[in-house]
Amino acid sequence: MGRKPRIDHEELARLAAEGWSNAELAAHFGVTESGVLQAKRAAGLSRPMTDHSRALPWKLRREHSQTGPATNLRNLSAAAQGRRVTKEKLNTALRWANRLVDDGLDIAYDPEHGFQEVPAAGSSHIGRVLAEVREAIGGSPGDETPGTDVPGRK
Image (cartoon, rainbow, N blue to C red; front, side, top):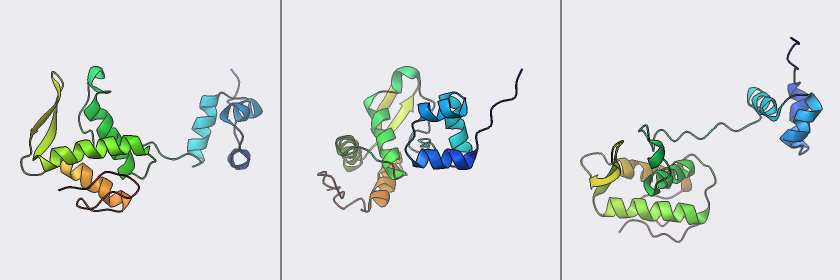
């Protein structure tokens, strides 16, 4: 068995900055595209993965992972972490979260039944997620969201 090909991080950085695709880099270095991605992570050339665990602290069952609440929470989480979320997706998620907060509701998750809207008791999960988004995009929970057409809380 041969030694694994070594990717020179400086050369990788230079070629990636020139716009080489992962497929071109893989062919150049004699590795797979997965190997290129691993080398980019090791060289600090890729952004860290978005962590949605604060917005989605539950272990979701597969059938619940693509539901409206899960999608909205992931979009809010991405925006709170400074990731780009399309205006339409962010507006949808903000309207949903604002409605819950304005109506005194929160979200709960049960693996058997999925997501449910429940009365907010004490610290609101949705309220916290919404506040993190507002802080990240430059508004407070009572302000209009910059760059969107979604009004803030009533």
